[in-house]
Image (cartoon, rainbow, N blue to C red; front, top):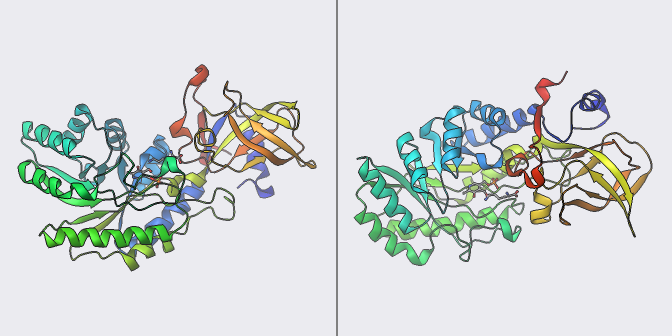
Length: 388
Ligand SMILES: Cc1ncc(COP(=O)(O)O)c(C=O)c1O
Ligand SMILES: N[C@@H](CCCC[NH3+])C(=O)O
């Protein structure tokens, strides 16, 4: 995206106050085209996990391709409705849904609650009963499949707080019998995020097959299977792999998941849709000598991109201004935290004050996780369409 063919774009960056989130809408369009084509081959339903990036323009663009929304809060449901996602394509997960949030979802008549505990199902039943409504739910089942990803973003093993475990199934069936304002329409699964070992999804399919058999033996059939999200992206080589291999990803589910007659399959993709269209653009404030290294101190920090500090995540770092001889730098932000570091011993062309630096693949969980720590301003977003 930032190679020599794009020198003009880089020139336009020079006049924009930094730091800012840059979104290449061409990459987003190509990603969405690919998702539409590859999921369409199998008739799959894709919901965008808006927690990855709830920027209005990004959400509107994704909605224009017909995707639904996967929400984790009442405010995300409201934002989805405002940006044109039809209620009948909204799913809502979360271990801690508040009364207010459940009411928002009931009033909007969303497609499905993904329920994570028995007390939650009982509360939804009570609030639905007060409105004389039926609430459609899927139970979020913890399939106990290890996602082989960072332990902070693993969600599908028994020790995690998410979902309902297998040893609770009998109690769930009992609860569902009691709850007259609940209609069970699906089973939901989500095992973690940034999964690059695709055999993990095969393991998920095989586990879902076993779970479906268990329920079928008890005459429980549902119309919807939702396998969540989690498909990872290439943070090392965003230019060689700007669009994840959705053909292979959806193909795994086609091959290994035993979908019953009349069942539809749903996905909740976040990162794989938006990560590669975004970059955080920053300026070098100072280059400072350390004991063993040089620090390149940027005007962006963990307040604009938390992932490196939170998960030791790597985002490719590029100096857009320099073509000098390569040197090693510890690339850090201005925040009063030692973990405010984007990378150690990063090889960059000779770097100096005012050079523009791009932190790549920040479209997912970048702007969405921004904070005002140290009373910093929230950075602006800039779209490729708006640049000359
Ligand atoms: C329930 C649920 N669905 C979907 C997602 C989206 O995940 P990803 O951005 O990895 O596709 C998440 C986040 O991990 C999630 O918790
Ligand atoms: N926020 C995380 C992923 C968690 C997704 C939500 N369950 C990330 O940046 O990688």
